[in-house]
Amino acid sequence: MVLARLLEPEDYGIMTMALIVMGVSNIFMDFGISNAIIFKQDANHKQLSSLYWVNVSIGFVLAISVFLLSGPLALFFEEPKLESVLKYMSLIFFVTGFAMQYHAILRKELMFPVLAKIGMSTAIASFLTTLTLAYLGFGVFALVAGYFVQMLGTASAKIFFGRKFHIPEFYFSYPEIKFFLNFGVTQLGERMISYLRQQGDSLIIGTYLATDVLGLYSVAKLLIKKPIIIINSILGKMAFPVFAKIKEDGKLKEWSEKIFVATCLMIFPIFAVSATMPEETILFFYGEKWVSAAPILQLLSVLFSIRLLRTTFGPLLISRGKVKESLRYNLIFTVVALLILWVLIPIKITYALWGLIAGEIILMLPLCYNIILKPVIGMTISRFALLISKVVLPAIATILAISALIYVLPDINMLRLFLGAFVGLLVFVATAYSLNKKDMSAAYHTLRKRIG
Image (cartoon, rainbow, N blue to C red; front, side, top):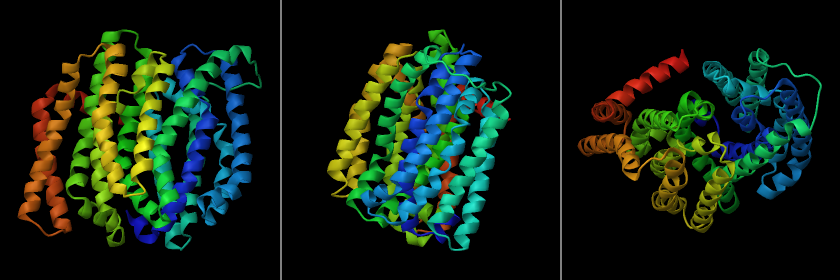
């Protein structure tokens, strides 16, 4: 990534701290109302209007709160620049509150091509803004400006396209939206727990280790999450709205398996390359000064691959209204993950990542089966094992093929990266196709339909 060549690890470290604060605030602004609207398919105009003004009001409160708390938060993180960064970023809440409900409505109406185009266009605008300002020497504020452009553009576009389905009136009635708020409170708790887990690593690293170390970890994690975010924008985000519309258990099981296989087959070859050639991957995207992040990237590739085997099935619980079960499931995962991080990160980051990998295999995969798959869709353990083998075996074959190439070409260079990626892709496609002919065809048609 060219930005990493223009910015310093400290810039990414400060931005990571700011995004932790903004992420928590975004969870409060939604208040779990979006999923409540999607789950309850028959929400009327007056209910939607009341919920709309709830989101707008929360947005105004959050804008003021983050602005006022920017100083104390900078003191907590021991990073003076964070105060001004948060003051600028807090202003976006004055706008995003007006767009929150429209995001839920577009998802409910399965307008995924529109959402994908909005995401792609605003991401490009954000990147160009950040790149220009980074080149001019604005440092971390180049990242802030890029974030501002993306959030403002996304909010404006969702309002524009969403008004086709609903234009709120100035109306509010608490009794009419009591169900939505009760549903939302449970979802709010789950999202807070999930976000604490997702950002807990950065928070603990920022507390115990230097800002530049946090920057190294952040860019490695960002690189790993990019393909997940892209595929999730096509398949993952449609899972819950689609599942919520399906009433037959057999059809729900069929769709959940299709999305699982399609998601893994799209992402696993990328992770196989970054796991076997982390140094070349870092050099290609970030440059030589970031090469210290290679061991982190390697372990994150393994961790997120294993995690993907269960997170794809997560929307099943909420789609059946089992919000309390979903909350308990995420609470268990969060407690385990944060305990591992809290104990091992002060010793060494790589130890903590190995601990998380072990936790996924020993605890979380079995929990996923017993709490989600067996009760909700009646999946047998043999079927779950078969599904895992269909996506994991091609990844293992790819890793072995790339490892053989590394043995023949021991020097780290871009030629080895390109050859490894090419050979790995051929092996993955051949192996995956032999195991998943029908599923790969379905994945192709689904991807083509959602993009087009």
